Amino acid sequence: MTGTEDTLRALAIYASVAGVLIGAFGAGAMVIAAHAPGKEQSMQDKSPLQARLDSAREIKEALARPIPAPERLGPISSKLKPRLQQAKVAELKARPKPKPRRVAPQVREVFASFEPQPEPFFQLFAFGPGRR
Image (cartoon, rainbow, N blue to C red; front, side, top):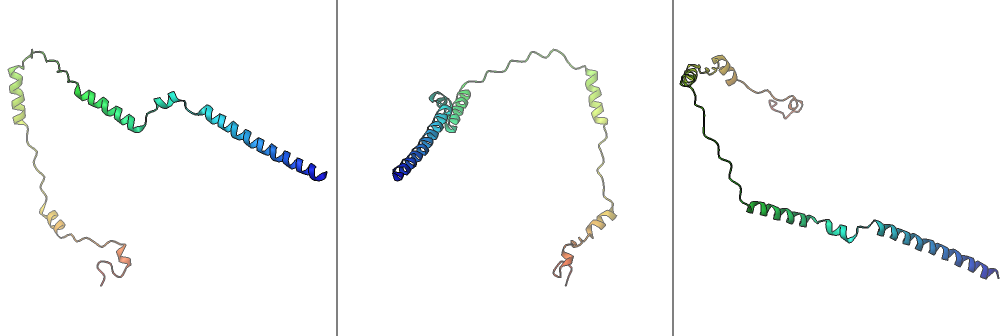
């Protein structure tokens, strides 16, 4: 009888493990089903393509509508006094023009005879500029 008791114990252990696994899968499925979006929510969410199509339709409709004309300006009601006009013209004529800066001949000669020095990095090597 010990053989049958051991077999019944092993069968009970296997059945309880299988029951726990099935229960865990069922509980997980219920949690996923509770948090899964419904059909109404999935209909509200738009794919990127659908969002671009909607945006293109809105732009097309906005471009199809005519632009209203701007409001007309009122008539010019004030005039410049003649004395102020003459003063502004005289001020513009009397303003001196700035003289261009001239470079001294010594500076030109210095820049013309300038020779760039080799970089210190290349002086470390035998094949750098200035080495023979």
